[in-house]
Image (cartoon, rainbow, N blue to C red):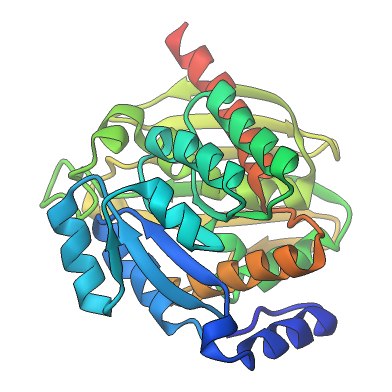
Length: 317
């Protein structure tokens, strides 16, 4: 599995895939929920450049079930998993993920993080600082930055200039008012934090590399858990993002449109999320081999948390 982009990077990935199984990086998975079952574990098992080594979860019986499905070791202690693995993949709530990520980095493990990295600036900064202090690699799995064709589209638009404005929406029906909740509805942190924190990172992960860092943000509430962000970017462009997990099923959807001197450009559709996760792992392994930090790493994750926390603070006022 290779990532699109730099031919030199692809060559490095191809070389890694030819390494005998016993010498490949060992990957441990933390988490046993629907996201781990549907995306993380299948992608780790299918990845030809690494070895899926084991699972730890807060529910031992669920960890044993997931580990048994893939024929890997089940761990009762996350620190034991850190000691046995080169990379740790996280499928945990953000405020559980953050302190474990700090411990994993201290153990010398590279980090494949989920979004948001944390829901407090202090915790997110602690992860980024641990990555820098212990000189490990990190990547945050932001779906649109690794799925295709969206990842290539973002890179293409970032190479253009003259952007005037952008509008994004991510309206999920995780907690719909008119139907059955999704498989991800049994998630206390999503119920508490809503669309701002769950899907806000996705929107920001596309807007920032194209329009520049956010220099000003304002936030307002709408119906259900809807949050609307109005953003000013370093390029001078303005953007908006409407975010929710409680949209009616008929209204759910994702979109992003850019407007500027080169016309109007819309985010394409995407699929194969496990494949995107495999490309995120490719990017992490490349960063680990080369020592060059990935721009989608823990530092970027901490910046996203800073912006989301600022928006949330305005909503509380």
